[in-house]
Length: 137
Image 1 (tube, rainbow, N blue to C red):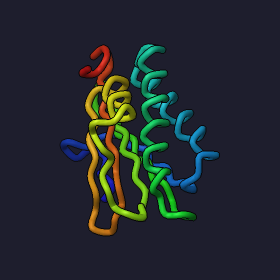
Image 2: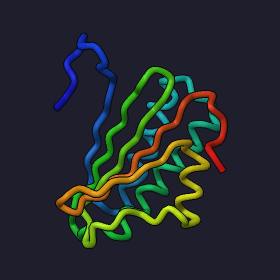
Image 3: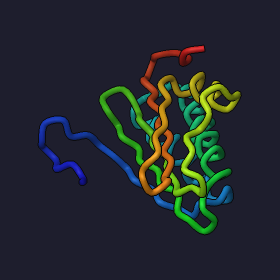
Image 4: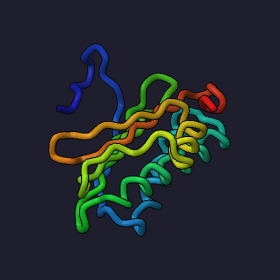
């Protein structure tokens, strides 16, 4: 499923898999900052993304299957960064969109979405464009 270099529409991506436990989230925060810096995001945009990734993971970890793996895919697309975090969950419920946590995600990342796979894996996707300013209120 990896794109082949040189094909139309290909993009740079990084995939990280780690234990679904809060102790490992610093790895994702660091990767987020490094990749956003590579795209010349401002310091404020980088910090917003770091916090947004941390918040998305916190939402998933609340319902993650104990001992499971948290996956994170970073896609570098022109002047934007798309981050998708996912984890197998006990109940397969998408995050509520009318919560404070979702509002924070939207404000920090810009575009936010979620999905649930048939195997109860829940994913949260964040899409931040460089220079776009704060997300929708």
